[in-house]
Amino acid sequence: MTPFRSKFIRLTALIVRMLLGVFFIVSALSKLMDIDQFEIYIFSYNILSLNLSFLVTRVVIVAELLVGLGLLSNIWKRLVDTSALLLLVCFVLFLCYALLMGRTDSCHCMGSLLPINPAHSLVKNAVLILLLLFSMGAQPWRWKPRWFIWLPAIVALIVTVFCISAPDNWLFGPSEEYYNQEELDKANAPQGELHSLDLKHGKHVVAFLTPGCSFCQMADQKLTHIYRRNQLDSNLFVYLTPGHDSTTTGLTVDSSTFLRPSYKMDVTTYALITYGQRPIVFLMEDGQVKATCHYRNIDEQQIVSFLSQ
Image (cartoon, rainbow, N blue to C red; front, top):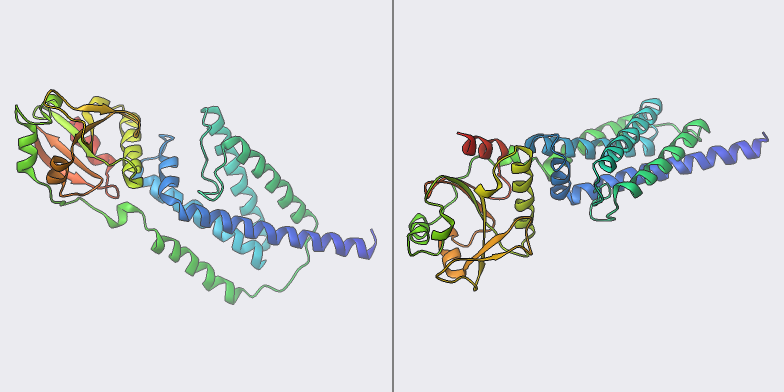
């Protein structure tokens, strides 16, 4: 191999390495910007608990950022190369599992920046592995890494991810949300609007949601995965939305917005009961609210324990 060709290949490998570093960082930041949906996507596989899903999503983001920064800085080259390869192999295995599960929805590997399905993402990761192997084998042009600059940057990066988007279970505990029990009792009374739902008997998870609200839709996704994962009776989960179609003979059912049917109730009654909050979830027993939560502090274990006791 001529010196010119050798230098060209090494320079090409260096450029590829830089581009891979940028790609990992962009991928991590896109996940961070869409982290709520990424959490729900991981949770939807029914492998991890909701709280563990919060943690795993951030570990994935931090791992991508560290690998990207390592590729750009050239510090600890062998460790970074091995870590990048292992990370991509883990992604490939996860995507293969997603395909075996029949998942065709966005895998959120690029967040909302570029929604792609597992099959397309699998091809993308295969290409990244080939590029990484080329970069590793061609011995890219070396430069002296200034570890005393990059090491503090790495520590700051990890801290920043958890500060910008700390796991919900770190920040939000049991809720003391205000609600109007008097108006709720009126709605559950024999002549009340909610009487036909029979919320005065037994335990129910009652979610007050609003169509078009992104947090309401994500609350719906969380609740749906909770009862599916724990094999709870879905009939114990009741969705109420504001509307003008309710009548004295019963509530109108609307199944066009959420993953399960929602019951439309009078807007004024809805606002009086919830003080206008959305979403808000009541854990109710015999018509009385035992606990409340909003999107951020929906607690899987709390709901399972409540319905199982």
